[in-house]
Image (cartoon, rainbow, N blue to C red):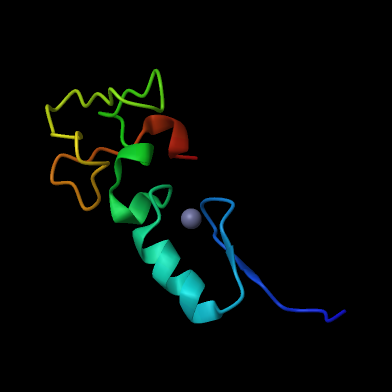
Amino acid sequence: MQKITAYKCDNCKKVTVTKQGMKKHEAKCFWNPDTKSCMTCDNFTPDDYEAPRLCSRGMDLQKGLNTGCPSYKIDPVLIF
Ligand SMILES: [Zn+2]
């Protein structure tokens, strides 16, 4: 058995074994407010995390959640 060092995302439960891998993940993590993604956006109303996904700003989420969204507004519950 070998002991390893791992890196955990500051915003979700994702873990990687390389620091570079985690930097890549955090740069696109849907739970990182800096990526301006649906999961932390006040306009996103996921009463069900499966489809249909609803955005009060009318963004098309049929192909997946948005990142770097121009209509992004941080969910007030995330501001401490
Ligand atoms: Zn993450």
